[in-house]
Each structure stands twice: as C-alpha cells, then as structure tokens.
Amino acid sequence: MTTTTNTSLMSSAEQLKNKVANRTAKIGIIGQGYVGLPLALLFSEQKFRITGFDVDQEKVNTLNGGGSYIVRIPVTEIQAAQANGYKATSDFSEIASMDVVIIAVPTPLNDHHEPDLSYIVKTAENIAPFLHAGQMIILESTTYPGTTEELLIPILEKNPSGFKACRNGHATEKEFYVAFSPEREDPGNDTVARRDIPKVVGGFGETATGIATTVYGTIFNKTVPVSTPAVAEMTKLLENIYRCVNIALVNELKLLCMRMGINIWDVIAAASTKPFGFQPFYPGPGIGGHCIPLDPFYLSWKAKEFDFHTRFIELAGEINLSMPYHVVSTTMEALNKHKKALNGSKVLVLGVSYKKDIDDLRESPSLTVIELLQKEGAEVFYNDPYFEFVGRGRKYDLQMHNTPLENLAQYDAVLIVTDHSDYDYAKIVREAKLVIDTRNATKGIEAENIVRC
Image (cartoon, rainbow, N blue to C red; front, side, top):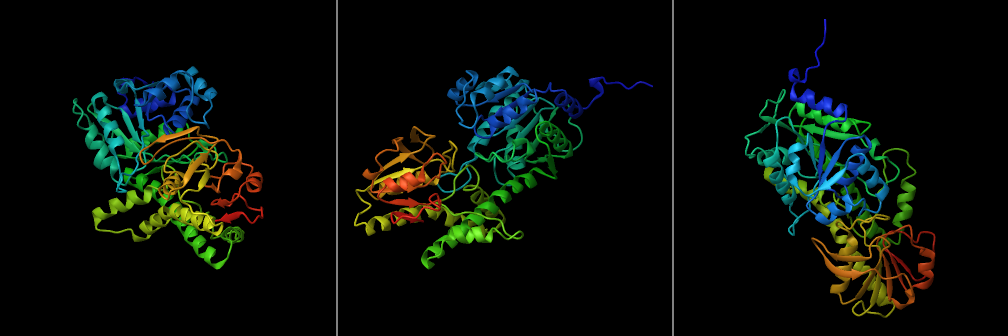
C-alpha cells in the first residue's frame, strides 16, 4: 500500500503547514519597527524568505541598504537576513505572493485617550485587494478584545474577489485564515532570548489556530494556543494592565512615603526578600513604551460598550499620568529652597527614552516633563546618548538637539528622568548645583544637592 503526497489531495491548511515546515512559505511582515523588524529577523534566522512591508520609504531604503535604525539591532543582523533573502518594500501589491502576512503596526491613543486603530484599518484596506485563498493573516498589534473579529475581518472580507475568513474546518478555494497573536517585546531586556518567550495564539477557528501555531512554532520554543482571538487580545491587555496597576500602586506609595520621610526604595528592597506572594515594581516619573501607558485605556474604552466602568484600572492610569506633574512640582520646590524660581531657570534633563539603555521615545514621560517645564518658563536642555535630535511626534514637537554633558554647574537643576547606564552619577552629583533623581539612580550617593522624588 502506498501513501500519496500529492498536494492536490491536501487541504489548503495542510499545504500551508507543509510549506512552513520545509521553509518554502513566503512570510510578509507589515510594520518594520520595534516589533516587526525583530520578528522578521527571527524568521529569517530560520531560513524563511521574509518581506518586510513599511509605508516609511526611508526605513525601506535603510533596510535594503543593509542598515539599521534601531540601536539594539546591529547592521550585521540586517545583512545576515538579506543573505537569507530578506528584503523591505512599500509596495503592498507584493502581498499577493505571500503565504503568511503578519501585521505589526502601531495602535496609539488619540488626544482623548481613545483607541486609534487607523493603522490597522489602513493596513487591512491595503491587504484586501491582494488576498488569496488559503492565505494566513495574523494581527500582532496590541488592541482591545474583539478587534480581530469585529474590525479586521470585515475589512478583509471587502476584498474584490469575495474571499471570506475560514471559521471552521479547512478553507475552501474562496477562504483565507485569520488569527491574533500578541507581541511580547521588551526592548532592552537581554535576560530572556526572544525565542524563549512563549507565544500566545488565538485563531478564528481551530484550523486557523493550528496554522498560526505551526508558523510561530518555527521561531518560538513554546506556543500557547487559546480558544479565540478575543482571548489572545485580552491576554495581552491583562499582562500590561497588571504592570500598570502595580506601578501605580508603588507610585502612590512613593508619594505617601515622601511625606512620611520614608525611603520607598528601601521599602521595596526589603519587601522583595519575601520568597512568595510579592513581586517588586518600581516608582518613576511616569510610564512609557508602546503598551503599558495605553492598554488600560483600550480596555476601559471597550468596557463602556458593555455598560461597565473599569474604575480600578482607570484610577491606575490616572495616577501614572500624574507622575510627570509630580516631577515638575518637586523640581519647582527644590529650586525654591535654593531661592530660585523655575521660571527662567536652566534645567538639564538626563534621558529622553522611556526606559534605560534603549532608543525608544514612545509615550516617554521625559517628553511630558520637558513640555511641562517649558510651560512654566524654564529654559530646558536634554542629554541622551541615544538621541542627537528630538523633533516632532504624535504628541510632542520639541525640535531640540542633544546637549553635551559638560559644565553641569551652569544649570540650576539637573533632572534624572531616564537612568541610562552610560551616566557617571557620582560625577554628575559632584558637578551639578542641584540633582533631581526620579529613578533612584543616585542610590548609595549621599550629598546635600540630591533631591529624590
């Protein structure tokens, strides 16, 4: 008895899984930023021919020239990917030749702290004309539960060929597959290899889940299939709201401890010795990045559709949003004690990225602190080894150049907002008139010119 391997007898799902297994599947990743580009490199390492899509032609040109615009991704990684067939493009017609398409585009908040899904909408509209039967579409962008089924699929199904998303069983010659798999990037974290981070996958139907799990199983050591896209979407929100709420808790406790004359950092260090029931979180000048500042508002916005108010989560978001104002208020009070007004003072802000040792400005509290200082009349400068210039973004327009870390005595205050490892904090304390430390960067240094907030 012989077993046939004729692909004509296989379902489209089996054919796609086979192509993934033998590395002949063509994978397109839309969005070549902090999520999409590392993902493209992971697939490329496994010998997939990857096409990176991006609407920013400058990024496309940089990548095709063998360059990189993300500090933690060296040009050698881009060039190694190119040797494996990687290329970047802004031509969405190439979607037609892809077997798998992964969407990793931004999902910010608008000015009213409501979800801005315009990037997902535009991307779906760009994909729809080039869909083909048996194609796998995976959304990775952080969003509220229901986005995949209520927003993405309806747009894709408006394609001119009349293709529909496969819900159950194997797709017919008029169906495609859809899944949601939340990204779990942690920029600057070198302790966990990307492939060791378990990958949650929720497909639109069991067959889609199986295909997406097969796709991600080639680059991640563990995949975690869940029942629906909404479960996967909510999983991502829970992970980051958990962090947001606990950061808000320690931020509020910090404010209380300051009034009581207690060092919150000593408290956290002592509590961290408990081997069960406690995980340390740390206070700061606010929260930044692409997820933690946004996710609570995504869920609270969606919850209103069900006549439900997430009061606890919303309060945590409010506390964290208030922290830059606390930093500016503390700076003002510290200057007053030195008989200086904030209005007219020269203030040097150290660090503008949202966390230490990375080149990422997304939702950085430093940008808010700078704008608030400027509104109070301060003459503000910044230093950051990762940014020679900070221009205009979705929520800021600073147009500032990096200031050399020289002659610190000329500033009325030096404000540590991002605690980069490159800084010599002992030297900064020695040379500066006044140091406002929002990150406990000066731990172990005792000096009268240090104000910890």
